[in-house]
Length: 514
Image 1 (tube, rainbow, N blue to C red):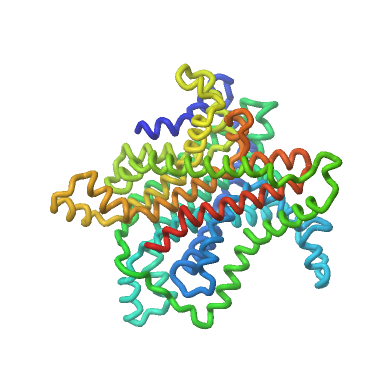
Image 2 (cartoon, helix red, strand yellow):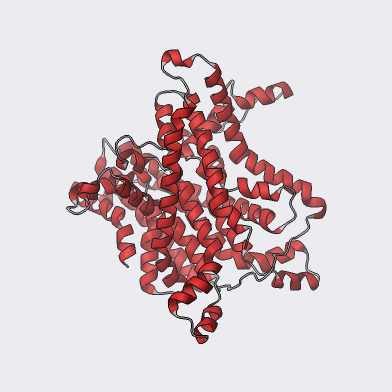
């Protein structure tokens, strides 16, 4: 419960500000100006989470359990779209389909001149699906890596087709990981502001940011509405999780590899199409901008590109991502243990507090930390220090570690711990030698989600970082504000490169051994 109370700090700030500002919540609640954007937020959240579930689960199965050609490369590339800030992805999409953009240059010679309009709901749905499906992919891939092949082999021996085996055997065993990812995608989507603002799709977060300076009571009232919606969604998911049958299974030998047969190359085409739009396309746009910047004489107008200036921000980005991921996993593991192993009500309440905070916009969480840091007598001296910045990251992204850890703990057969106990192993020894190794794939997936999200985080970094502390995300934002597209493009490419290296060494390389 102590962990939950720490995570509820940003929500308490929203409640406190509403009381202080005297917000008329009833008039906000009954206003059509609230319900229309809320309806659009919920519709976008439902559609994006549904499509992300299909894409993330399908890619996880293709890369982990089939003989897909180049599956190791696809496995390494699939989590990377998560590192793109939504506003960067939306900018790349708009620029690619703009007049004279990359799409027109590539498709023009083929006779395609009528490019589709990417603004509004379609653009927001496409961008958020492409950049959030790794929330589903990573936990599902980690779960598939630890599944025992015995049930699948039995089903195949009984004459079941590969699709029937996937639907009736594999899918039920990974359903907990899918729901965990879907919840994260939904909460991320309803809290996103960058993509929906650039693509001109009016949601609740867009109104919050529009009112934050000129109508603070309404902005805080809408933030409270968003937080309450998140609490209701998390509580509903918790209720469904209690009724869901828990599947305990661990892999004791190599996983079953499903031959795709004549569907191998069509499957490569589908995986390539997804990653082409989610990763290769944005990288191509950034490379195009960076190449133009390096070739131009932009230094004379103060927009020169200096690759060496990205070294320190890249080191800071990697350092913050790794430290936050390690601390987040260590902090939320007891909560996940209580909810998954004992289904404790106290653990469930703490879990709700941790997860619901993920729906609050990043700016609200950053402002709450500023509020508590300045007014609190104990942590006030930490304002604009590295430890407080890490605390902000953990509060914002702890939900991702919690859901992945919950799935990892729930998948460990309790009988193994009981057997070790009968042999005289104490609690700590059972945890270290039996349970923790079996939980490792799921915990690594959670750490990977936190690491990638931290590396692209912007509002908390801008408000809470020590003076002179820059990350690649702040470099991208600063370049965008000054109109230096080439500088922003090179920083984006550096962010993708650093993320790819860390994701491979921290997460994917170890999954190959399970």
